[in-house]
Length: 344
Image: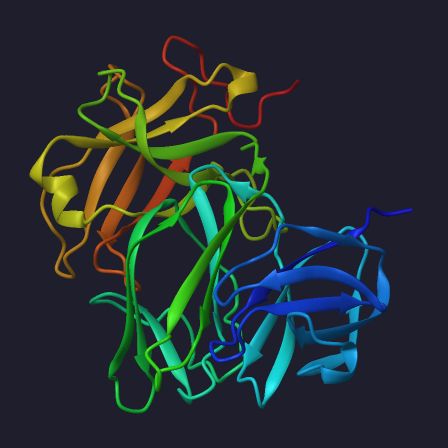
């Protein structure tokens, strides 16, 4: 049997006062206030009758009632949304799959009954999602862990409805930004709730941004994900040299990477010793499109074994996209390379 389903109840009805929540006829939550969230409540998977009433009232006076369906071994939010006269309950399952190191995951849920469609955007940047109507949730998006400024705009007019400066999306967390309240009574606010998930262990090689020069021994300041050969079918000419590839987005402006010494390094995973395979310092001539291509090589060898291509990220001008291309059989410093096509 799977584990029970976990739900967290969110009170997003500004004009309703404290609320009690009944599940299958039993009182599950007493006196939750507007913009508060309960702890995790465990229920068996399947259908459950849910009723929401003003605190102290009987179930006959429910402002919202109906059947919800839960699955074992899942986590969800049960968001009480709307107004006291037109209340509803939305069930929003949580994506709690593992995340790569250095990455977080987030989405935005719109529970603003008098706003029409809204658009969440990175402040001064691009939209996080398509316009969201009342009760809609954006798709979860993975992002480099960090602190971001978000704005909530009215979709049609572009008017700023709410600013969310310094919103944290931490490493290894799934964060929900739940918008509740109303514009008309100035009760609009955001409930930002992170849930810790597991970090996936990078298998093979991975790339990082480091502050300083190659060989300085600095800790990485941004992860760029795995650097791996293609997983598809072998096509074309046989016996070609395999090239590992990777792409990641660092939450660091391109200009900041050029203003002081930084480098791109590629390392083995921990089980293989974690040693540096290749490194390249960020600097050189810009391309016609404003990108930069740097050589990567084993520290101290002077022999290029790949390249990294850096450019401002299209979706966020305050971030940098980095593509890695590395000869797959390049060895650690001091080791002999394995000849391509050698017999075992």
